Image (cartoon, rainbow, N blue to C red):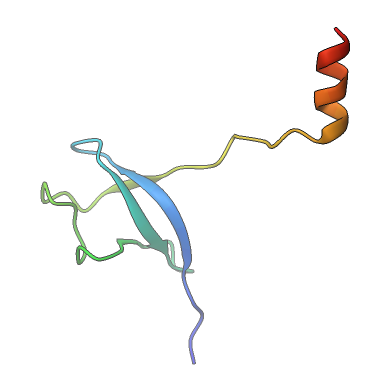
Length: 66
């Protein structure tokens, strides 16, 4: 079997819709459940990277002491 794609969130570069996508090892990005394009017809997407970090219990304790 071939390599499985990674799942990610992406934004359509044309209309700004957020979509669930598959990112393949060759760099191609395919929306999940809508074929190869957004509902607006665009086939170009920008994959979002998570910048949210979950604070540890120690971080929460330090904030409460401030």
